[in-house]
Image (cartoon, rainbow, N blue to C red):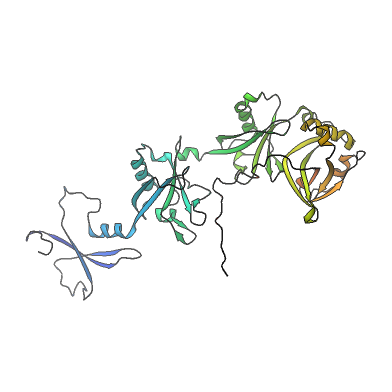
Length: 387
C-alpha cells in the first residue's frame, strides 16, 4: 500500500544488515514471523515487487542494487597526450574488472575492440599520469586502478593503440638516439621488436630503418647517462634486458678506424668535462661521449690529432683543450709524449670500465640535450614547508 502496489502484488523482502565496507543484505521469508527472523527495532527492511521471467534489469534485486550504490564510482577519463583535460566521464563500479572498464570505455568511444585501449593511473602528487601504464588485465579491479599511496583518485588516462595490447606487450618498444661518426645527434627513433630478439637483430633492423643516412659500416648500441658511456651492448644481449626509461640508448655507426682493431689496440671511452672552480675542481661531464681506438704504443700527440679530425674542431678552439686520464672522478693531466694505453693497462677495472676514460677539458658551448629519457611525465610537485 505504501509503494502503491496492487493488493495482490507478490513482494520480495530483504534485511539490510550492513552497507559498508561491503553490502550484506539477506532475504526474508515472507511466511516467517518477525521473531523467527530475529528482526528488532531499528532493523532495515527493503522490499521490491517480484519480477516476472520476461523482465530483465541491470540490477534486478535489492542486494544487487545496494551493491551497485555502495561501489558506484564516477571516473574522469583523459587522453594520455592531453593529461590536463577531461575527455569524458563514466559511472562505473569499483568492483568492475579491467575488462569491464575497458569494455565500457570502448563502447563510449565507439571502438569495436577494447583490447586496443591502454590505461594509465594518475599520480596524486605530480598531478600527471604515472610512469608505467597498466598491463593487460592488471590490476583486477577498478578500485585498485584508482588507488595511489593510500589515497584514491577519480582520474584514469587512456590511449588508443594501433595493435591489441596483449600483442603489444610481447614487443619491446625502444627509444633510441642516432649519432653520426662525428658524435653529432642526428635523430631520435622508436622501434618495436619481439622481446626475445637480440641486439644483433635490432641493429640489422635499425640499419634498414636509417638507410636514408647512407650507413656504410656496422652499428653499435650504447647506454649513455649524464654524458658518459656506461655500456656497449653485446650482440647476443636480449632486447628485454635493455632499459630505456632512465638511460639514453644511443645507436651509432662504427667508424672504419674503430673497426680496424690491431693486436694490442684497445677501445676507450672519451668524455668531455669541465671543472667548477668554485667547487674545488668538481668534474662535470657534458656533451656527447664517444669511443676511440688507441694503439698499444700510440702517444697523446697522435691521439689528439685523431680526436680533432673526428670531431672537426677548429684549430684555434682545439688549442685551448686540455687532455687528462680520468679515473674515479679525478683527472690526471697528460702530455703529448705520454703513451695513453699504459694508463689504462695499469688500472684495475674494479670501479667499472666507465670509471677510466680520456677526458677532454674545455668550455661547454654545445646545446643542452636531456640527460636521460625518463618517463614523459616525470615532473615532481614542489614541497612547501611553512615555519
